[in-house]
Image (cartoon, rainbow, N blue to C red; front, side, top):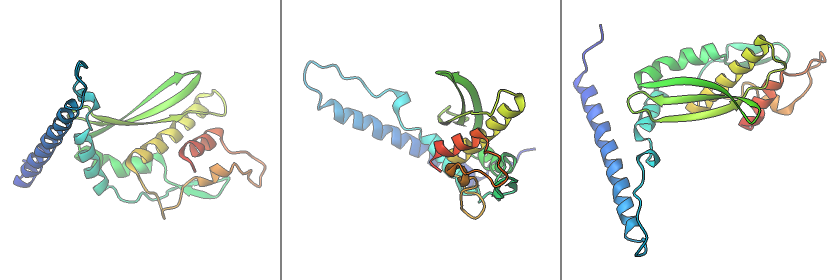
Length: 202
């Protein structure tokens, strides 16, 4: 049984609705101001709704981020002796804050210009407003295991990028990938790891 909404919840919802209404009014006022600067004879086109700032999404992300704590590094790369936060650990840390804020996470996998890509979408459930982050899926080969590993890697980094998640002691969990160094045992790093690090600027 879900708890009945409190006066505090109702007041917060009212304040959020008023803020969204205020932001929309400001956008309309700005559009009206711009219209006065349009030379005679040129038709004025109002700002479309889809071009307006996703205020509800911003508010929800802010609420979720306030609850998300630093995610511990619970995984270890055996070749490079580097600790990192696994996708399971990251999701366990963010799923309740996201649910409480009315946010949904969905992933799409598709091919564009011959490149396999994964896009993570952070969606505001009530309004459909969303933010996205796209990442290349570069597996060592086309085996299901390699592709699945590369997808997990992409999901991990797109989710942390969208929510500005910090892991462990604040250092990059896989920054060694940017150096493309070869381990002492002679093996090479998974290409998907290097591509992910390069794409994020690590």
